[in-house]
Image (cartoon, rainbow over all chains, first blue to last red; front, side):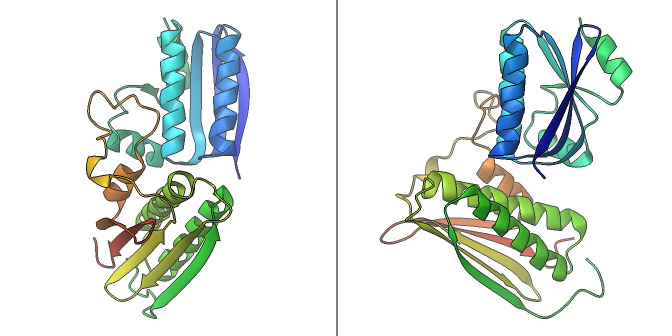
Length: 114
Length: 146
């Protein structure tokens, strides 16, 4: 299974429900293209719900970093929600866990956007 | 590790095309052998990820998706260790100067974490230049790592 995305709007926050594998190839490029489109449309508040992400490789991590940089440099905010243990461990190993604003609750996450 | 893990040594050798499909295939093979070897789920995942990262390096950076170049993928499992070797036919690179993905200047790079993750997941990692061409990595997971 590659990656499937579902985008919904909660106020001015775009929540992207990500499911599947974010790996080099179709998985990471699908996520990249979707986020680029959102940024291009002026979306400033993006919450990536990774609760259904079963697998992520270093390329997928690279896409998260790229997305964070792109959104942040554009004056926006990108946050992460519902990390599985596997994804959390990877972000911690790579010292990226503290770079992202990570939440376990969607309500709390949405409220945290400035 | 499961007490009832199979003790039968298992070896696999494949010559794979330089495609992303081969990356998936190698990962699946490694996960299957690791499961049959009795590794727990956490170690099976780590082995699979290490194989994936190494295969990506071989396909993308080594062989550059060249359809004329193969990746040699082999696994050997015995009572003491699970060993994976992945060799490409590329031009090689200076692996003595790999950037540290954890250094502040590299932390926000979008690439460069593959080998670091392999070293984190496996008990041993070796890399060597092949003659006349190519690079081979050796990944080892001890059967009694926990």
